[in-house]
Structure formats: C-alpha cells, structure tokens
Length: 399
Image 1 (cartoon, helix red, strand yellow):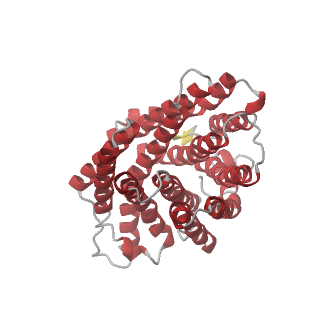
Image 2 (cartoon, rainbow, N blue to C red):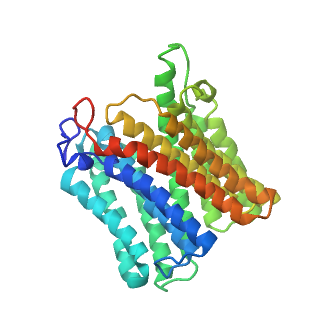
Image 3 (cartoon, rainbow, N blue to C red):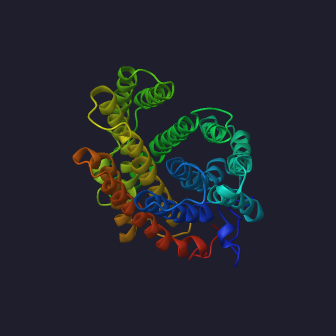
C-alpha cells in the first residue's frame, strides 16, 4: 500500500498501481463474456460448465461478478481520495484480484467442485474488499461513508442466501438473495449518483456560465432515499402489491424530484456528464415500472429488475468507469465517440428488454437483441480502455 500522492506506476506493475485499473478492465470484459455465454445458453441450449440453473448462474455472475468488480474498482479508488489515506496497490491489490478471479472460476467449474467449495471460494472476495476500505473510512471519521462497508456487508449476506439454497441448507432463498443483491446496487447507484452527478455537472457548466446554479435540496434528498429504502424493504418482505406499488410510485416521484435542480438538460453536449444523469434517472424509472406492474399490471413483473440492472447499474457502471478511467490516468474528460455509442447501446438495451415483451410475444428476440447491444457496449469499453488501464499515465505521474 502506498500514499495516494506517491504511488508510482512502474513498468510491469502499472495494472496493479490503482484499484480501478484491474477491476474496471475485468468488469468490462466479464460483462461482455458472461452475457455472451448466457445468450448462447438461452438461444441455442449451450450447456453451462455448472450444475446450476442457467437463470441463477446468469443473475449471480452479473451481480457478484461484473457489478461487484466495478464496485471494487470504484471504492478502491474513491476511498483513498475521500479519506486522504493509502492506496491499495501491488501485492495486496493483486490478492484482491485473485479472490475475485477465483470466485469466477468456481462458478465456471461448478460441475467439478463441491457446492461448499464453490460457496467458500466465491464468498471470500467481499470480506476482503470490506477489509480494504473499512479501516480508512472508520479512521477518517467520515460518517457519511460508513454506508459503503455496510452495503457491502448486506451484499455478502445476499450472496450467502444464494449459496445456502445451493447447499440445501435453505429453501427458496437464492432468488431472494439475488433480489437483495440487486437492491444493494440500486441503493449504491442512487447514493453515488446523487453525490457525483450534481458536483461534476456544476464543475463543467460553471466553466462557461459562472452564474449557473446546480443544487440539491437536503429535505428532498432525505425523503427520496427513505422512501426508496422503504419500497425496497417492502418488496423484500413480500408486501401486498398495492402497498409495494404505492411505495414504489412514491420512490419514483421522490427520486425524480431529486434531480430537478441538477440542470440535466444543460449537459446534453457533454456525454461524459449526461450519462451520469441517465444512470441515476433509471432508478426512478425502475420504481415507476414496479408501480406500473404492481398497481395496474401494465408491465411484466421483471420490468423493474431490468430497469434497475441493465438501465441503472449498466449505465452508471459505464459512466463511472469511463470518467474514472480517463480522469485518474491524466486524460481529458471527454468521452470518445465509441463510448457515447456504448452509452446509447446500454440505454437502448434496457428499453428493448423492458418494453419489447409488451409489444409482442417473441420473447427470444427481446432477450437476444438487448443482449447483443449489451455485449457490444462493454466490448467497446474493453477494447478502447484496455490500453488506457494497462498503460502508464501520459503525463508520467502516478496513478
């Protein structure tokens, strides 16, 4: 571990010089690979190298493989900046990467491993990540950041519920654990998006209009977050549709109102900014889908989950990986055209996956088409950013 200001990128070790480098690269590649495998299984009946139900394998790997890698890259980079503490680098970072890779290999080799071995290997990564970020956060006394180790702990619990069913220790807990895991990342998107989107927007817009006002309302912020958590808890608790739908509607309205002073429309000429707004906007859209399903039956039950996962998580992950990948390697904060295309592909994939099944019964098309868009988006990210993430900063500085 090294101080944030003194961590030096040396030949052969640059990939392990900062948390965002290996984990963003792995997240991008795994997002494309795992969905390509899922599409082949779904469309052509390809056998998984695992005894697990394909739908459970797909959901687990998108959550605890792809999304957790992206979260690790963000937190291992953001926490040292927030707290002014040491960067996890070199061998300790390599060990974290090894834990993540071992979990993925366990799921790919599940047919040849005992379920308990798969569980132990897969569950090891999150505690290691918590250990890496919790100490600096606690020592800094920054109470507002305590939520991140807490959310990761809930994510670990969600994964444990998933494995408990695979081990025959429980019944019907895998799907519940996956839903809990999705909601952990929904909360992360809302919290992180609400923190960085207004700030980065203000920084960008004030360069051309110093008098512009980008602000947040503390009362609206608090009520929106509380209502969101209440809606998620109600769904996890199996509340009647009228209650869960009403809370989802309230959360959707509150989260949309939260954005009213963010000057979203003023960012349309800056893709690296508007994509942050779009990522957050998918959260109220997801709750609106939940309300439409529970209260009126206008959308299928899984519409909200795909708005949350493809829309909110997928878009936000691309947004953060792009910005951090450029900014922390000393490059201008301008999204390449290829990444703008990736943003549009993921957003379109979410729309097609949510509303396609409503338009016609050709379910296979409404799975394969958005899957292809998703694969293309993250393949673009991986190809464009692999040289950036694996190479030194052009200015010769650390990071």
